[in-house]
Structures are given as structure tokens and as C-alpha cells.
Image (cartoon, rainbow, N blue to C red; front, side, top):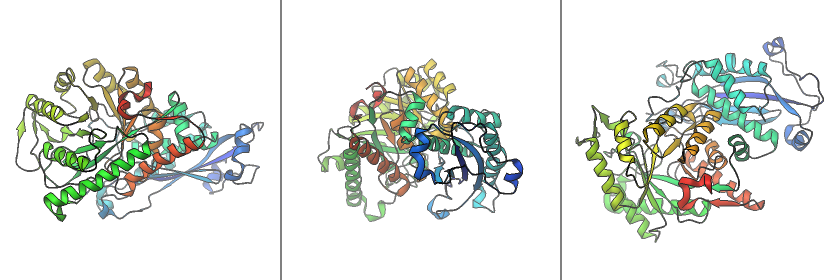
Amino acid sequence: MTFSDKVHTLFTYLFHPKQSTQPVVPSNQDQKNGERAESSNKEPYSQRKSEIYNNDQFGALSEVAASEPVEQPPDEQRARIPSLEQRLSKSTFRAIVPSGASTGTNEAVELRDKYTSVYGGRSVQTAISNIETVIGPSLVESRLRVDTDQKKIDQVMKDLDGTKTKGKLGANAILGVSMACARAGAAHLDVPLYEFLRRESGAKKPFVMPVPFFNVLNGGAHSGNEMAFQETMIAPVGASSITEAIQMGSEVYQELKKVIVKQFGLSAIGIGDEGGFAPPISRPNEALDLLVQAVSNLGYTGRIKFAIDPASSEFFQAGKYDIGFKGNSNVKSPKELMDLYRSLLENYPIILLEDPFAENDWDSWTEFNKMCPVELVGDDLLVTNTEYVQMARDKKACNSMLLKINQIGTISEAIEAANLAYSFDWGVFVSHRSGETTDDFIADLVIGLRTGHIKSGAPCRGERVAKYNRLMDIEADLLAHGEECLYAGSQFSMANKL
């Protein structure tokens, strides 16, 4: 069972007129007594937001609290899922931090309590305590602004932690605060979150709507079938908009269900961690053949392409790859695995390959990248960390970075990694996690950073669909306001240059 952690944190921001000489920040004694200082303006923020924006008022952190509510039963593969709530005066902002099932060795550290009697050892009371007793008081004391000081806020938390992997305070605690502060900053500036993130990253306009990569067939650590490759995806590059792309992806998903039922029966349509089907197949060509049939049935051949994430670190041992590790062993050398990938690329419309080799098998990455004709994405290899992005560049190991915000632990560092990848003329591929949540932050992130493609699982289950719904809402809002927005389409890899 995969559990995600839940951290539920409250931030209260008090707004004061620019001409105020002393921000009203509660004293330590006030905080101990549970009292909250109030601004001179008693109206709810929602009623006076434009006034705050027009008068250039600022927000001072005044309180941080945390809790661990359970919103979803553990038997649904989630213990529930780090939630972080912020309040801006009387407006509330939440950020929910995901968790991964297959994780890179060098990822930022999730802090878990390991009390076996609570959530099977996956509770996060220590992370909560760190927010309330360390992070919160320090941010209050810092007097930083949420509208202009995102990097400084993140740096304060990094300095408080003092470790390379955020293992002291917990990346799950730090990231939730970072995300919620970004939402509060956007609200204070009276701009959408994606625009706030665009300004933070320095991305240009017009906005680019991403190609959604739907993980419609699950394997590896995400399912109980014998398929070693973790994700087999469809990408509607031939759509004209994100709305049409999501329609196409959803239609193929439902058609795929019919194809699977016809071939394997009703018992074969169970789903994996990311909402994709997990039929009784074990070879990658079997998965791709199912997709070819579903796409063809709907007349989308040529308009929908495929992608694969083998997550090969999961079946790498002693310098070799066992692509039958979940059933009948089928061990391949790195060269034999390269030959398999080349065969798949020649015979199927695959446009992206993610983590085809293990995170420590640098030689295989470099060798394969010499002649790789598609986007070659590093996930476990890079862990959204500039140190490993630079190393991969030096070794010429890949040409794209997967961006997972919980791999690095702050929004500022995720943006820094994306910008470094862009400086190498790489692609950037925004991603969810297997232990995902209903937070739709990454939908705004993919647009704000202009990455051109995103994967958020199958068009199935609320935690996946939330991102796709948000993307359609953003597109509709931009068009309604006369804002130009492009659909990345076949240029998804270099969308930042459109």
C-alpha cells in the first residue's frame, strides 16, 4: 500500500497600509495566548482585494499552525496527503504535497514518523511540529513579503533545515509552505497563480498550453500485473487546444477499456496507481499494440503519439535489467535493452522516452543519447536538482528534465532547475506523483514555466482529473480575457522558445 503524507498548515497574513511605520505583528505572548492581531481594516480580503492591490499594501506573516486531518481512507492507496492551508486575512489558500511510489535515491527527503501504530508508520507529526515550532516562527520573524519574496522565503526554510536533502525539517513540510506562499503571493498581486509563477521564472508571453501525456496503461511499481515498464502514455499532439487534447485523451481511454475487455475480459480493467489500466500483459509491445488499436478505432492515428516511462531503476540489478522482474525473469544487458528501445521507436509512434536506464547507469544514458531520435527525459537521474542536471549535461546523458516539485522541495529551486535545463536547450516535462493529491498547483506551474507538456496520469480519479480540469479552466479564462495562448502540439519539447 502506498501512503501519502498529510500536513495541514495555516498561515495568517495581515495587511497594512503602505504608510504604516510598524506592521502589526503579534507579540510572542500574544501568540502563546492564541490571540491574533488584526489590521485596522476589518473587511474580509475578498471584499477589499482591489483596494489592497491598488494601494500597494503588504502582508506580514503572523501565525503558522498545522494538523493532520484524514480526508480519504487508507484502503484507497492514500493515507491522505499532505495538505497545507494558508489564510490571507480571511481568505484561505491550500497546498497539498504528493508522495512517490518509485523514487530516485537523491530526492529530497519526506519526513515520516515511523510509528507503526499510526498509518502503518507513515504519519507526519514530526513534520507538522517542524512547521509549527521552527518554520512558522522563523517566517513570522523574517517579515518577508509573499508577493515579492518567494525566493527569500524558500531560502529561509533551506537555511533552517541545513541539509542537502531537507532531511531535518522534511521536504514535505518545506514544500507545502513554499506552495502556499506562492498562492498567497499571487492573490496579493491580484494575478492568477500561473502568472505569478511566470514572473518568478522570467518566462515570456504568450502563454503556451501543454500537451497532456496520459498514462493509460500502468505497470512496474504502479500496478499488480507483470509489466515491468511503469507507464505507457498517449499524447494528443494533433489537437488544436488543451480542451480538445483532453477530449481526445479521454475518448481513447474509454475506447482502450473496450479493447481490453474484448481481448482479456471484464476482470482485466482494474487500474493502477495513476488511473491507467493494468491488464495481464508483460511485454511493452503488447501495451503499445493495445494503444494502436484504441487510437485507430477512433480515427486518431497520426494525431495521437505515444510515450514510455520504463522507470528502469526499479528492475536494475548488478549492471543488468530484468524486464521480467514481476513474473518470469528476463534479464537483459544494457546493450540488449538499448536494442529493445530502438526496435520500439522504429515500430511505434513514440515521441518521448523517460528513464530508460537506471539512475546510476550513466554510461548507458550517454551511449543511447548519441543516436536517440526522441525526447530523452531524466527523472530519477536528475531529481529536479541543478547539481544532477549539470552533471547530465556534462556527460551528455539526456536532453530533457522531468520536473517534480517534491523531488527538490521548494518552488524556487524547481524553477531554477527548469531554467538551467532551458539554458541547455533541453525540454522540461512537468509531472505529478503516483501518490498524488487533488491539488492542481502543477497545472499552473506548467503554464507559468512554459514547459509545453505535462503528465498527470489517466483521465480517471479525482486527483488526476483535477489537473486537467484546471488546465481547461485556464485556457478558457485566457481566451475570455482576449489573452493569446498557443497549444504546444508537436513542438512540446521546445515550447519555451515558441
